[in-house]
Image (cartoon, rainbow, N blue to C red; front, side, top):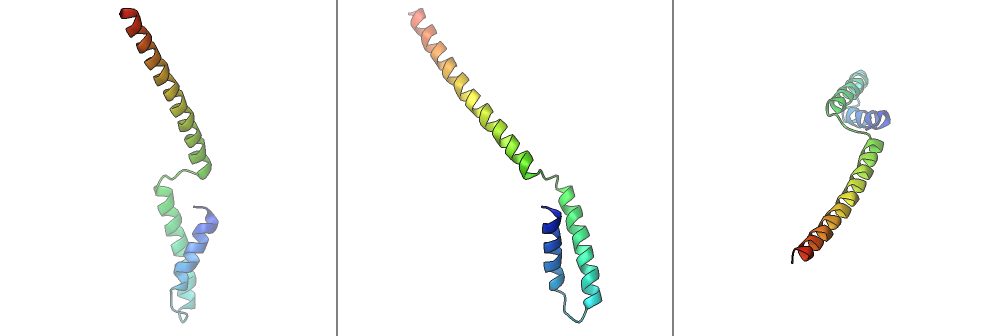
Length: 84
């Protein structure tokens, strides 16, 4: 979640404070923003870019594994035919 997203969420939370508490609303919005940012940092999240890169690595690894499984199956068939 980016800074803009945190700001928007903090503003939405602060908007729930009754209008008569204008100063409290501003203080709460700042506190909401800090708490949200700290909470997200503790979650050890990855960026979308990092996720996409790892997804590509996984897809390449899966393709390579499938190739190797096929090659192994072919070798097993060859070995079985030679053994007969």
